[in-house]
Image (cartoon, rainbow, N blue to C red; front, side):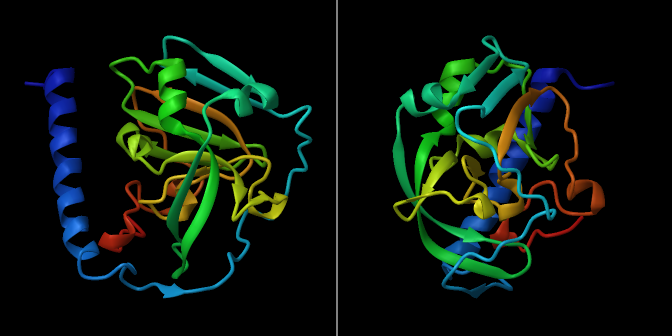
Length: 212
């Protein structure tokens, strides 16, 4: 018989905990994930479109299975509690940069603002260049998950996703959409741009989880 929503949600959470335990075991052996090498500067990788979005006209829509759908302009975004977080940045193309210092808004604060419904299990991110990527909702509850506007003390440049980009440090960097335009909480999963092309849904660097 088909399992209930609660049973499916419990099974999913258990699967994610098991994956996390395996990743933690690898992480305890080395700070650098398997197959990665260190770089000093962040390379620029994207779809070749760099949307120049003035802060005065920038908007972020947060929608879907939430109690309080919200559209934030730039003053509203910077009025939210601001944090600084230092994390490592891992690209699926095998480079990593350690100790990136990001400033911005914790995604936890966004969750508090919009209050996702119980049935919201996935998140779909859409960028101003048309790029999309998806994660399980558990990924954005990570303490380092944030919407970043500053890198190493400087406003985030357009090439790296300014004025605002997503950072989910425990996943490969393609999960952190640049030039973020929309965050949609969903009951069902929707593969994003690279996920449709064979990249992993779960994208854990410490499990070398690059492709399906």
